[in-house]
Amino acid sequence: MRVKSFWFSCVFACLTLIAAAQEGYPLIGTWSGEWSPSPKVRDQVLVIMDYTSTTLSGVINPGEPDEAPIRVGTLDSRNWTVHLEAEYKDQKGTPVKIVIDGKLEDIGSHNRTITGTWTRGSDKGQFKLTRE
Image 1 (cartoon, rainbow, N blue to C red):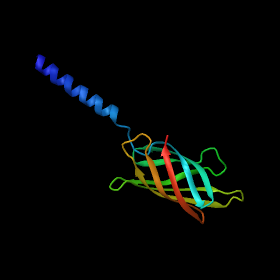
Image 2 (image 1 turned 180 degrees about the vertical axis):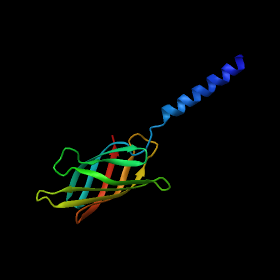
Image 3 (image 1 turned 90 degrees about the horizontal axis):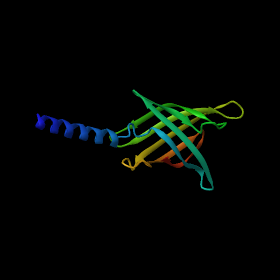
Image 4 (image 1 turned 60 degrees about the vertical axis):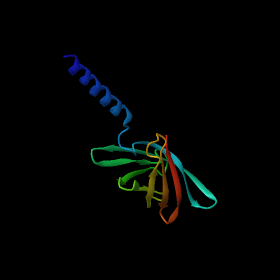
């Protein structure tokens, strides 16, 4: 009887440690950083992402006039590449598309990063986001 209790306790302890170590889907959370549409301009950005079942969702720059809900979001876990598409309306009411293509880095860290190319309308530049 003691042997079974011992093994049960060991298995339970291991499963508890594994569950505590996992953070879930690697893109969930609040990401902040900046992107550079030109060498002299650096725009601050905030991206909030969530994942339910099979859908990556979220919003870029929540609460701002250029708030853009994420309409397409993918993560390729073979090479840890991220693709996001969103759209907002400018001051004239014209739709402006945002396309983000990046690479997820420091995956084991809570403060992992995404770096790559950010396109907003006809402007294109580099970006870096860090999960808070």
